[in-house]
Image (cartoon, rainbow, N blue to C red):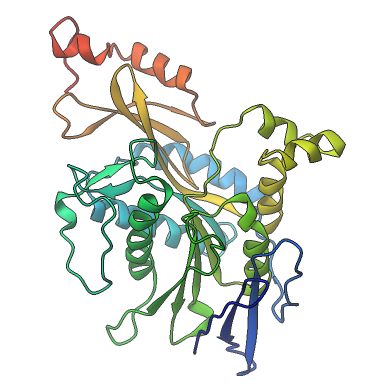
Length: 353
């Protein structure tokens, strides 16, 4: 199977995949121009991608058990393992236990040098990288290099996840091809990874840090991928809504105007219609002066964790059916008797062990 990509006057990416059934080559055309229509797919979705009501009830009955098994990854390798396991569990659903999730959204914290001394450094694919000394950091304003520094962290992370998720042939992992032509400006931190497996039905397409303007391309690939896995990693829209996001969900003229001004409601609805679901999520921020992590798998509730004072582990502080707000997490910490970080540091509050 061969992949080929090229830029034309309208900035399109063409990817050739081998049809495993007809043994013919079909072109996948991803349009990065909103005024250009993408090519008609030869593939069709055969199964509904949304969980049935019965499957959802089954998942709810086991979500509590799954939530209690969640743990915050403390190393790059551990996070890669957790993410790939969640992807596999969601995709390879046993018969009678629900429907396979073939359109997945993954949100990750990203590896960074503890001293940020590798700002702007590129890594060669065959280079040996010491992953043991990397710290995992939420994709926030502490990344001084902005979206491109985040891209240089998310790209090797996604490659490792795809290598672990994909099946090896005779001990050889599938080839992974990076395509940056989807990023028209070259500086928006958007990219595409595609695996080239010996069995075309096992190919995976991974959109890295897509923006709302990338949804047309996601739609094009998703329509053509059929039962193959299409995933989105660290989309550039937030998990929480602001005023424009809420307004854009309302529909009608007001919703259209809000979407035009940047509200993500319209884009999320399109992704919902394609069947995209959150499969593995780990987010982070600071609450009461200490690091907090929020985690969720597709088959679990949300779980909140607080970093202990020795910065060696995270302590479970509570769970929620819906994504907990900052105020919810603050109350969880208060209910657990966890005081402000500075108060713990100077002995005015009990240490968090």
